[in-house]
Length: 59
Image (cartoon, rainbow, N blue to C red; front, side, top):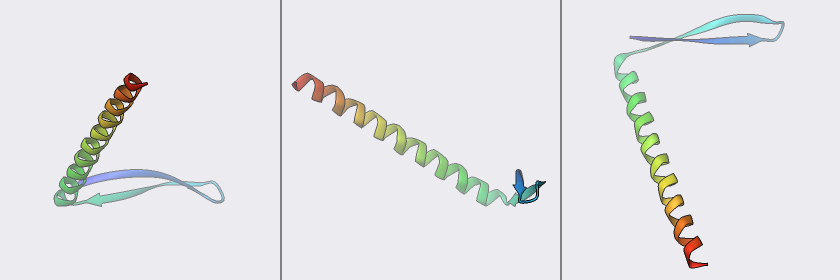
């Protein structure tokens, strides 16, 4: 089981930590989603860079 601590400051300057407990299956799903998002972003940046490069050559 994974635990994450998130610091929070609420009105009245009360500072405390929220603890979030996640099971192993949820952690695996989050890791897969993070990897998929990373791959999509890298692909998007690559395609945009290639398009920009070839558009400059045409001009």
